[in-house]
View 1: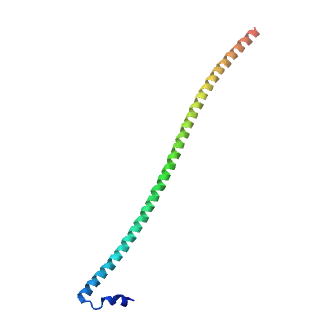
View 2: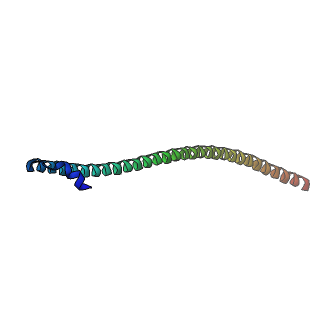
View 3: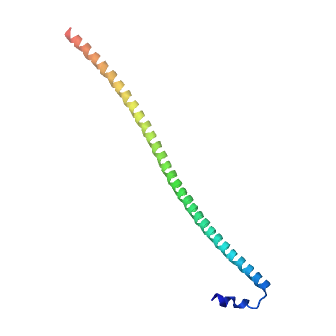
Length: 120
């Protein structure tokens, strides 16, 4: 087959044959270089797609974390409000206990006084 391909070169001068050989060598070299660059391009495109996917995944993760953070902040706010309400309720109840304790002491004194009066 290569003999048939080379048939058209018959009868050409050595100088022209040399030039043809140089051009064919250059074509082969350029084809190899093109293949290498194509491979580099495909490799870089694959790396770029991988990086794009990584960035997209990180964006999604960031959005999830932002939503979770917002939810936790709302939960903290609600817990703080509940804490303040419980603290207020506790103060009210302590005040009521103090009042009732005072009333109890007053009633005890009244009972003691009345018992003393009865003994007389």
